[in-house]
Length: 204
Figure 1 (tube, one colour):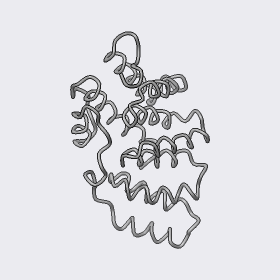
Figure 2: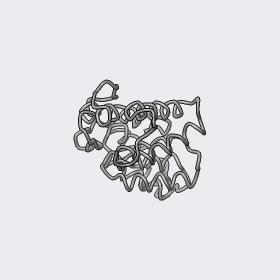
Figure 3: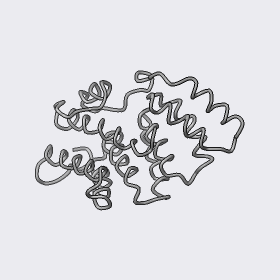
Figure 4: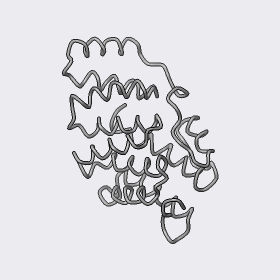
């Protein structure tokens, strides 16, 4: 998956989940039927990759695997394989290749965050958060990581205070950007659901 689209795909699902989990409706638009189904659950979690698998281009996969075998220290073909499987929503397969790529390119915050999102989609929120922490050590102002951090805090850990903090950081760093606007919408949704006093505390 392209790194610049990671946060938005997750955020789209998150806003659907906000509608189902906090507000109790499905008025928010989600990007896929799987997300819409998740939105109806009161304590929703990411769908299993087994139920969301799509077809990948076998020719591209085989070509990239050949390059990866020939070049064991090259992160690029492994990253591209992870991207192909991510785009096909085959997150377990994506994880296998992203983990190899991260080992070879440990200073790539985009790659690190892609791997964290895959962990989230395979119901591993703690591993996702650890990966986002690694990304933020590389770049504390990486807004896509912060946006995803808020999503996993809210929907993977039910930590709404932590989510609020992450989203506020996104807004402070990039108030007019796409991530900043997405974070603002998430915070506005939380506030409208829980009154003018602000975002709810954990467990609310």
